[in-house]
Amino acid sequence: MFAQFNRSDRRLLLAVLAAVVVFILWNIPQLDFILYPFRLFVTYVHESGHGTAAILTGGRFAGLEIFADGSGQATTLGGSRLLILPAGYLGAALFGAILFYLNNRFERSRVLAIVIGIGLIVYSVLFGHVALLSLIVGSLFGLALITLGWKGNEYINSFVLNILAILTGLNAVLDVIYLVGNSGIGLGNTRNDAAAFSNEVFPLPAAFWALLWSLIALIMLGIAVYYGVIRPMRRGTNT
Image (cartoon, rainbow, N blue to C red; front, side):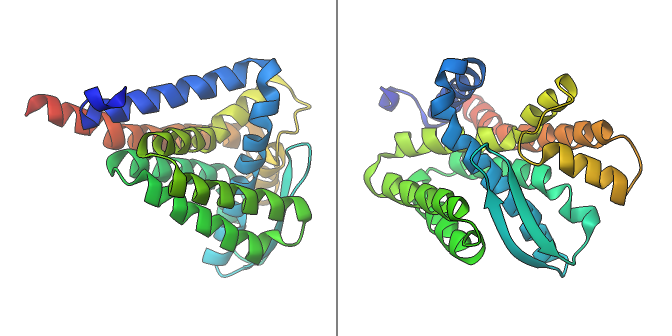
């Protein structure tokens, strides 16, 4: 099916198909059982963002926990709260944007899946071992990606990686929709991150920070889409 398209068109088609799948999963409650493991993965990336920011700012990452309801918690010691608190939102956005760009810019999706899979397993052993579900989520997704990269063809790998990239990249946007629409929402640690930033760093309303981080997340993903899909396609059209 995809062989009849040129490289740029294949990228665009797989990205659009992935976006359609994500949209359907988000909007059909009956499919929530399919989305559930991906929610746990998004939470894993979200909490990993906090921990990685702590390490990069001179602190320590004691570990991450994921709970069955899809929420999570990262335990950090020291580091800069200015950077640690937004890193759940923006870390997920950055991970999604980089993954989308690499997956679509370079046709090495199988290699990329294996590399990410190995990274997830290593990260889980180092930081996810504090809670069984965290270790399971990181390790199973790692093994699944390694298997996908080893056995699946380039198109399937690219499609799955696009789904992961879009889900994580738009995590902040999805969270803020729930946050603004339902004051009692508890999706992940979203509300807590924004409220904590408001209380500890800069005393503006939590919704302001959530909206700002969501805007940054959209910009990140937009840049990845432009340079990963749109710009190469336009160049191919002009040549």
